[in-house]
Length: 306
Image (cartoon, rainbow, N blue to C red; front, side, top):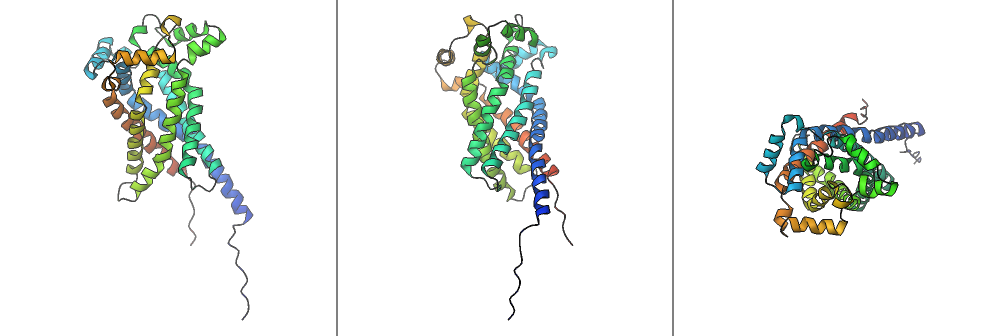
C-alpha cells in the first residue's frame, strides 16, 4: 500500500499573522469597553451611592439620609457626581484593560486558572488604587455635608491640597487613606475577576436569555465582594472626608474612632449595608452585562465556509 502523505494541520503563516493582529486589536478594545460600561452604570446608580455615603459618614438610617438630601434641595442632589463619574470611567478602563492584558500574559492560550485570574485581578486593583485615590479623596470631601461652607467646589479643595508641601500634599491631601484603599481595591478586584466568568459560564449552560448570565454573575459577585470589604469602605470614607492636620489622625486611630463611633457593634459598622447590596447588584450587574454584551458584539466574526 502506498503511504498517504501527511496532512499538515498547521495554519498558514498569513492566517496566524491575521489572527494575531485580530487578537491584539480586540485585546486593546477592553479598555474602551470597560470605560463605556462603567460610565453608564455609574450615572444610573449615583443617587444610591450618595445615600450610602451619608450613612457611612453620619451613621444614620436610610430615611434620615434621604431627609438630609431632601433638605439640601434638588440642585445639590447631584453635587459631587463629576469626580465619581470620571473616576468610575477610569476605573473601568484600568480594571478591565489591565486585567485582560495581565491575564493574556499569564495565560496566552485563553484557558486561565484561578490563580492567574487572582493575580491579574489583584494587579489591576493596585493600578486602580494608585491612579484613582485622588479622585475618591476629592469626592468624599465634596459629599460630606459638613464641608459645604468650607469647600463649596472642587477647585476649593484642590486649592487647599496644593497649598501643602510636596509630601503633605500626598500624605494629607490627595493620597490620604491610601493603604485601606489599596487593600480594598486589590482584594475586591481579585475576588471579582476570579469568579465572574465561572459563575457566568455555569449559568450559560441553563436555558436563559443571553444577557441574564452576565447580569446575574456581576450582581452576585459584586454584592458579595462589596459586603465582605464594606468595613474598609467605611474607614476610607471617614479618613478621606477629613481635611487638615487637626482632623486627620493616623490609620490605627481612625479605625479605632470609627469602631467607637459605631458603639463597638458590627451591625452599626454595616449600617448602609442594605443600600450597598442594592447598589452593588445594580452597578456590577449592569457593568458586567454591558461589558460582556459589547465584548461579544465587537468580537471578530468567523466566516463559515460553504
